[in-house]
Image (cartoon, rainbow, N blue to C red):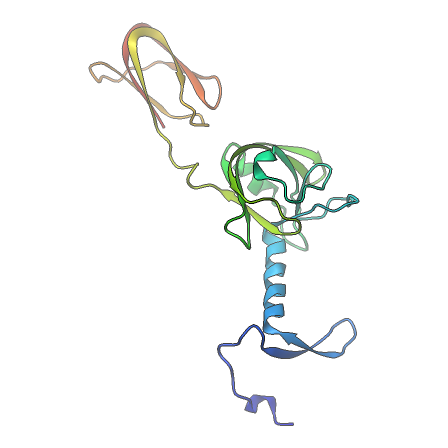
Length: 231
């Protein structure tokens, strides 16, 4: 048999090309396709950086590391619009660090839960809350925004900010009738910065009470008309 270094190097292998390797479980020599090795490498990466959707029955206990599931599991082919909460194990497999800090940073923002193998399969939600269930398992409270296709079991899903929904939204409020209190519904889903001017475009200072992520009350020492700019 010729020395392996004498073989021509193929710099553009096909998925169906065959490689020779060793099965570590029994030491036997085996053939492996380039495609199968590629899939194994991608799956190994994804399980450390994304979550696998589990719909097993009976329920696995404890919930697998790096998994997303419904409270009572199940749910294959569930429509994204029917989802209001999901259980997520924030501990990732092997030596990867826990993802809790990352998810906590997303609370209050609009997120995308995206199938890593299909751009057409995703759900867009506002992540309203992240509540500990037990240990590293948390319940994500979700408000549906948009979506395409349905949940597929054992697929890997990444969770990221939605750049479109989380863009620097702006709201202009007009107070036509003079008033010392302005009640503003802005629907920006945040506590915005506020600039107020009167009808002469002179800046007016007052006190602000953020009554929710979408509403704010402005109080002034005297009634006047003008505009408020929120972003």
